[in-house]
Length: 414
Image 1 (cartoon, rainbow, N blue to C red):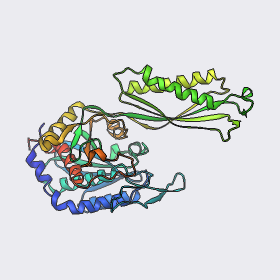
Image 2: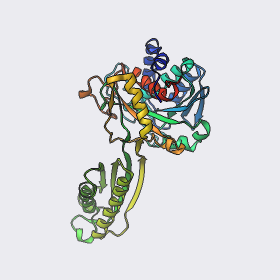
Image 3: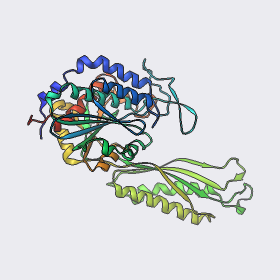
Image 4: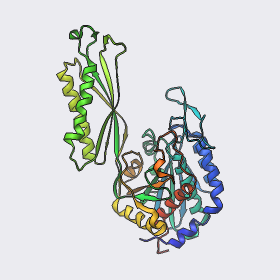
């Protein structure tokens, strides 16, 4: 397998002429951010853009979309873009910023600020551009290209929602599943990937421990869950430091501790919100077993009157790039981008990207694109100021998808 650079160059030959239109489209998505599983306007505009160039589109669930471009015999390549935004207020200072964008959160019933502070608007624009490029230059490639526009990545629900709504029956089974993310950790104008673990697995755990309420002046009459929860927080710091081998990477964070209402009242319960990250499924299992063991033993030591309660949520699988497929993508990146194709260090963030290819039983490759020329001062993803440079980022996103898919669809045998 090798990239036919002349074919890929021809597929991408409209980038300059289409740039104003693509930038306008990007700004539309940026200025109309929508919460997870509520991306109705976004999905409607994506469908409109695809149907305008006669691309077959299928709805999957409420807001998921699958675009299929069949072009004769050959491999099938799928590429995914996540389409949801975050419940934050934008502070990028861009003249096209969605500073005042709000949306009614259907779960809470509250109006909340919304912003594309993670770059999913770049992903949408990039995949739309790639679909349009493949459709416009069908004489330069063979096979089937599938664009998967996935909702609700930010809540770890979207990929599973598409699986539950029978995406496997709607799209042809791909030979490889591709995905990308705009990042501040990759130099601006560069693409980077790596075989093996590239994004960590993640889980949030809500832990409720029980005490016995009492007056603050008579602690001996109660069981203090504040002291109990504090002991758990301190003991959890030993899990990574003393139970995980130094060669492995793991994170255990207690992000919130809620207990009590008044200084002289000992409450009857406390809640801890814990987050874990790991690049190995065995390490993740160890973290969760250790957390439950420590919580239970600290409860026993504190004379807790009830067993603790554990609720796992916002769980993200490991993103573990397939070695052979990643090598093919990297070879194509090197051939097309030259020195702008780089190694990417694993990122301790997490994604639901791998859920769909795992459900389909196909290999996948995930990479990063650099979104900021001033990398040193670039805000990280989820920062209210996160808004990548339009140029060359929007072009780069389209190029990366076409070049990666071209390893299968526009190979040197054409």
